[in-house]
Image (cartoon, rainbow, N blue to C red; front, side):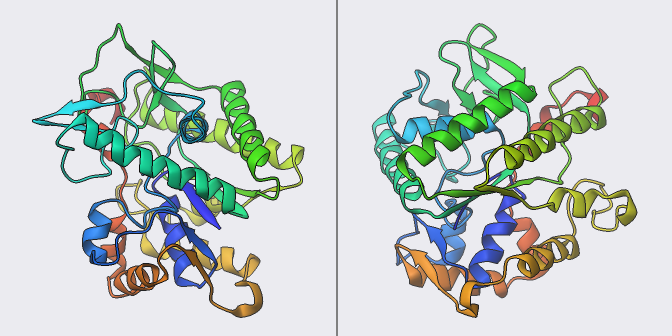
Length: 325
């Protein structure tokens, strides 16, 4: 099983690994790196080191960049004295020293992604956002607005786009078809993140923007399940946000999910999807690194695990206009 998606999806991957599923880590940390340091460099967040993938457009373009059919024009952002990857700008704690180094590391990463999509049997994807930042030059989709953590926003080069149902559905269909072209056995499990937006680039209040985004994503997920027998849906969104729960699973800020919420979601998940054969199994290039990572996370408190979950979207709240609060 492989995972990708918005920040809430990190909980799914962590729990699959701890419960002994055949969790695929196509880009494991070097054996000599401690779990804590590996986490700082984005290892173990997902099945490869792509960081958070918030939109269907990002997901589709990840496939296209991995198979070589899409080469974005703007392939680095300047940060301080170094450069970062625009498509995973927070994956490293410090900028790369040169564009050549960045490109070399990215090439290795995309090879890992290609292998992941070729080898996985099940791909779990959590849809998170419809709001996207695009290049006007070639349509490249970034996880964060240029200029927030690196680079410079240029309105002649960059544009905001709030993807609609038709666009999200088309992106997901294209991704699914592209993956099954190279891996016909691949099945998909979709979820929708229950985490509301921290900020919005639209002219609406953030609660309204959240309702739009989650409605579009949930509708797309539902229709994909109906259209394809090899796609299933798990209701993490409904479990957490149901009015019946009266916000029981949310932090006081009304946005972050409490550890008990994550635990409840995953307990329901494992009731429906028990470990095959009841045996632990690991599919990874480094079984030892997976074991160490799981041990490292078990030793953390629930609050520490929550703090470890990396959510780039929170960075946008610092740039949000007051009307979005």
